Length: 221
Image (cartoon, rainbow, N blue to C red; front, side, top):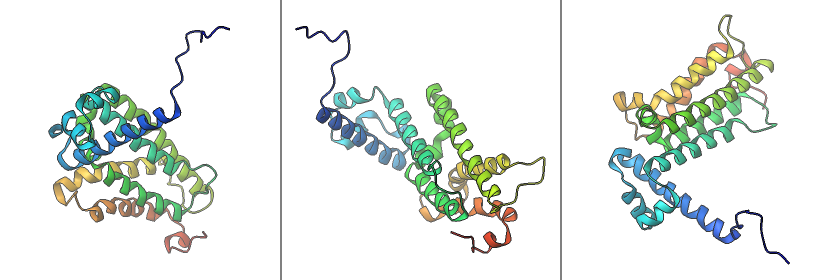
């Protein structure tokens, strides 16, 4: 009886795959904490390995360099946002909008190094820039779809032409992504309460488009 597998790679035992996933997650969690505290420029892969309790060689088995770690954190951050706004079958509502905005700013705080350093990181890494452009298009599409549902259900009024729901979504995006760099200059980007205010500002730009019921917080749940 032949034991040939026609060139297919041998399957990894489930336990080994789980251990690998746990190690990779530990590396990312350690890197995230260091990047948030010190900034990416001040953190080396040796720093990350030490914080994760690994040898540098073990870290390199999982991630070839610091750029790969940053890309993996960016992907994890983008996936968390997309999961938040893309819940299938859940009705768009003002209540859900407020909850999602609050959670979005919690995510921004958790991954604040990306929000602070995004432009510089994208300029330094073409692969990261491409991934970010793709994530931006997916997330903006989610926001537009969410806004269209709000308009279709009468929770918000559509802007007067030529403005569109997509314009409102873009304005909300600019507030959300620009808020932490703004706090670097005018406030305290280490204060979660100040970070959370971006969600309030997004609601402020939407206020003129709310119907009377939604504006007074009496929206049907």
